[in-house]
Amino acid sequence: MANQEPVSQRPSVVSLPGQQRTDARITELTAVWEASVRATHKFLSPSEVQTIKQLVPPALRQVPQLLVARNANQRVLGFMGLSEQRVEMLFVAPDSRGTGVGKTLLTMAIRRYHVTEVTVNQQNPQAVGFYHHMGFQTYRRTMTDEQGAPYPLLYLRLETE
Image 1 (cartoon, rainbow, N blue to C red):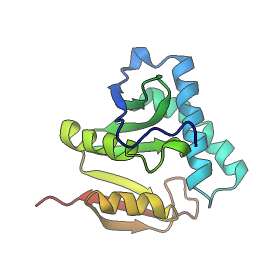
Image 2 (image 1 turned 180 degrees about the horizontal axis):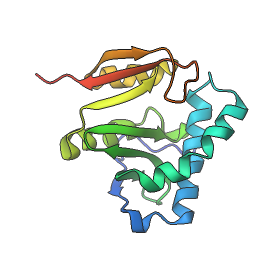
Image 3 (image 1 turned 30 degrees about the vertical axis):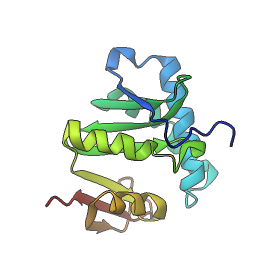
């Protein structure tokens, strides 16, 4: 785990406007997406990952707000896409999981962008647990994902006091 950042070293998070979403940056983020999905979405077959991967670059280009977390050496540790008050995507590099990257991104999204909702695959228990730990509660469940595949989704809202 030589690449793992110390917990005490917070990543820098920047918003990446559309004009800064170059092909090289999209490729870099797609690689983080793929590594993260392979580490956490064990319910997807390799061919399903490859099929979904084709949808990632356009989604990264189109999401209204894209936040990228980097270490001091500018390596991408994770990223988050937001639309209005909804998390559309949150992926953390496998060697950065458990170091506070996801919490840093989500906390910024809640405080700065007033995020209150997220949808997560039920078959990704680490993500479900993370969002519950961060104060989100399930309010709806579907038996399939948005493409009609047999992957149940949980819809969560941030519980405010």
